[in-house]
Length: 127
Image (tube, rainbow, N blue to C red; front, side, top):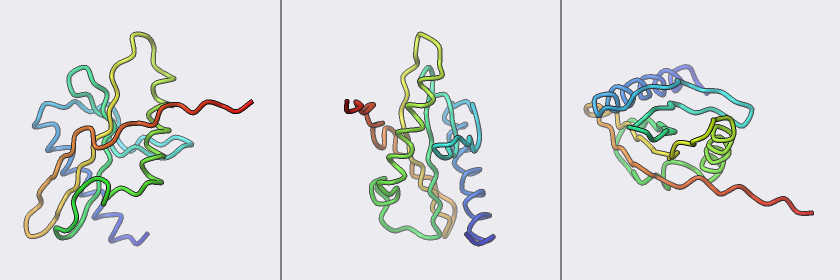
């Protein structure tokens, strides 16, 4: 990925975080990296633990989460959600996945999709 795209993505993540903090979210972690992948922002919305995927685009276009987050990334976020929950102590908080699309031009705008998609349930292992 080019340096320009990396900077644009990082700027979008900062803008999305600021937007969510204004809405009362509290930051738990930034760019949380695990073997299964990376979570852009991990935040608390009240008692819910929220995995936030940020997508930064220059100009408006298709903006549904399904159009902006490929299936492979959705699966990865679901695996990360299961991994996080497995590490938490009881009582487990509700966990959800939100998507923030940051449209940079003409002026930065955040499109926030709560519960953008559900984490996949754990798969049963074949015996």
